[in-house]
Length: 189
Image (cartoon, rainbow, N blue to C red; front, side, top):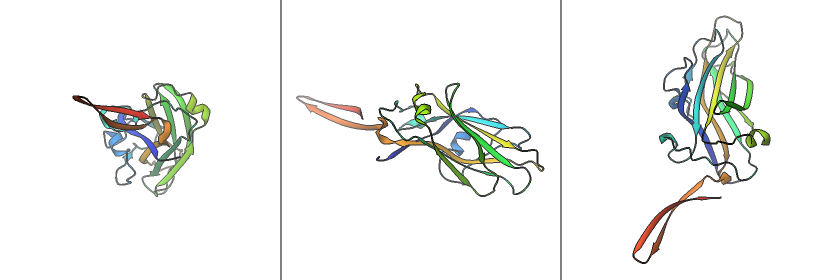
C-alpha cells in the first residue's frame, strides 16, 4: 500500500465555544499536550474545521485529488472528558463536503479522562460520494447525558488517512535542453 497521507484541520469554520482558538491549530497534531476543550455540555456542542492535506496545506493549497482507484480511507480521533465522574460524554464525528454530509460516526466514547483513540474505515460508497476533495470539513459534536455535574469534551487530534497512491505523490523535476532549463511539478499516479 505504501505510505499514508493524512487530512488534518487547517482552518476554523465554526468554533462553537471550543477553546483555545484558533481550534484547528490545537487539533491538528498527534500530541495530547495540544488539545481543544468544549464548553460545559449542557447541550450538544459542535465545532467544525476545514481539512486539507499535502505540502503547503497550511497556506490553503488543498493538494487533494479524487481517488484514482479503490482505497482504504480511515479516520482517527482522540478524545477524553475533562474530569472524572459526573456526566457521561460521547462525541459524533461527521465528514462534510461543503454543506453536504458524506460520512458520520456517532456516539464515540469519550467518557474517560484517559485519552481514547477511535478509528474506522469509510465505505466505498462514502468515498465515491465525494466529488470536491478541496472542500472537505470535519464536524465534531460533544454530547453529554443528563448526569451532573456537567463535563467538557477534550479533542487532541482528528485526521483522515489514505494511501499515497491516490494521486498525491508530487515530484519536482528539471528538464535541461539547449540553452534553457525548466523546473516542473508533476503528480505521480
